[in-house]
Length: 286
Image (cartoon, rainbow, N blue to C red; front, side, top):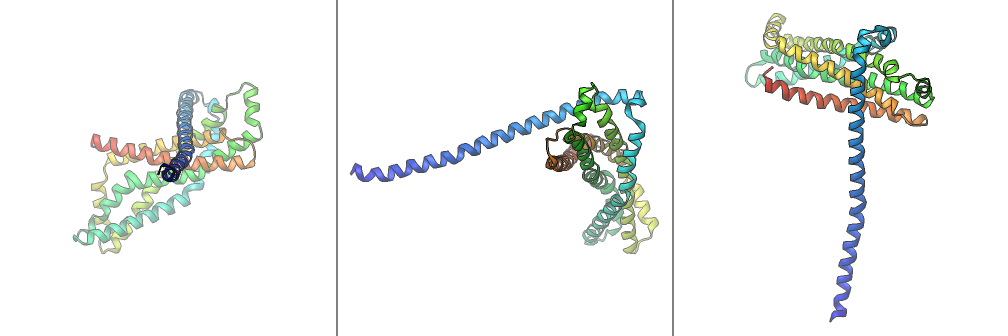
């Protein structure tokens, strides 16, 4: 009888060993990924702190901020980004107005589309969409530029000469992103609101009625919130793009990975910070 039971018991033990053999590598992998994530978050916080410490000196001493390069970077991020920012925000505003008008038609309140499009575009969608677009255009470009310099050992040469890459390479890009993104966001707000007003006119209401509803719904507080979060988005997107560039490893493929990581991190930061803004402004009643 014991001999008959030995087979099933041995099979159960073997199955338990197999499960443990599978679970152990998975747990180890999860632990390693968690450790890497915490290290990366720590590196981002430390880098943002270093950039923040260097900003006052650059603003007080314009020579240190490389004004000419900052203006050129702002032109590349801002003026060249106007078409795509305007188009995307116009289409987003049109979609929101169309869907909102369809829903409000059930209650016979389609005129309130102007209220909805104004609040949504000013407080949320224009800053978010513009931040994502800047992360895809400028954030990846900053990562690729600094990553190429890292691969070519140009940054190592600066460090060897005793020069800090942060004021020389990072600050102009961070200043450009911080200054440009709020302006692009305002442009995106205007494009989205224009789409909403055109839809209101298409519903049979005069533009003046839609504009009146819009002016009533969107106060100074909403505009301040939208611009404030755009400033933060610009700072974070530009800074994390530069960080990914400085973290680039060796080889041509490393530059592509850094650009991808910059876009992903930039978009993630935009969404997370927007959620924080939403909670805080709601709690404060702004």
